[in-house]
Image 1 (cartoon, helix red, strand yellow):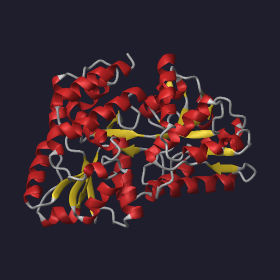
Image 2 (cartoon, helix red, strand yellow):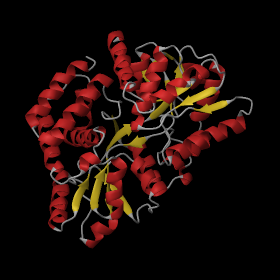
Image 3 (tube, helix red, strand yellow):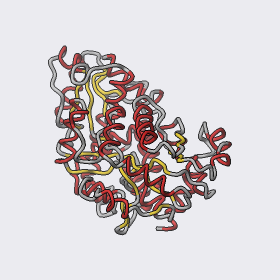
Image 4 (cartoon, one colour):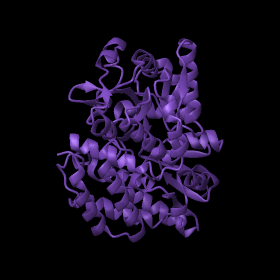
Length: 426
């Protein structure tokens, strides 16, 4: 595992060469070193997420006025730039005080396996968190019995968003199965309406659709077996999911490769497209940026076929090794994991709290429903966001899906995923 962890860091470091903001960020690195500030490193710079982070920092400053805080967010690339800068700093033994990392493989097979993180079991015991976060979630931030980070939010990745006016005008119901989706899509296409908006300028968006179809087709147990090597990618059920993915791609906008996920969301908001499959940060974008009303302008269902499942993406923060202001970091992590901290952050970001005892009254209709389903549904880690599989596999999977979107060759996709499976933990 140590070898894979080093490969993870090397791969992340190579991203630094192409990251558009790395120069200015790297120039500041030496100034930040040993500054004594509580440097909070993330990629939260967009609407909603930035507001949530600022609210969290404001609350921390009110409670800890003597601790200097620096918001060290790095913009761009859906976290790609930030991860590249982080890899450079971690290799140079200049870690930020704490940093954003997805729970699951990105944390455990990356920074923990590379021996770059301190365990936090003592903090969990002190704050009595072991029964406040779901066990499956704690498992996602643990390795060999040690807990390494604190989840601040939960996003759901298997959501289909739809324009309510377009559906009402065409007398359609939101599809809950793939068969229903294809029937609805055919009717919309016949009316000249783009059924499904896609913006895969960055390939993870298409990978999200594929992982959603995989989850719905395989079910939770077999889906999870893919990432342990207990189910092969040439399994007939995986091929069936790939065929469904291929068919779904026949309903997307022609200019998908030049759009990002926000652009695709705009198509749905304007009624130029009827549906979009995206994580529920899309809800934050609809509400905060586009000023749409929840369950009036847009509606949602679980991605067709995945009802009862919860594709989980969780942002977490931990304690890197070598940090000098350990006490200050733990103060911040304590706030991060508290009801007060989670309820200050998540309503603004558009996510739901990782704790199961947060104040539901602070959340909108979507948030309340998702909080309930989070407690009841089976949790499945996201491939596209680094929770299900190591970085090496995720990179190769994104490349394979990117090629598939263009060529739509099921056999080639399966072969590529089979070859990439050598990156998976056995």
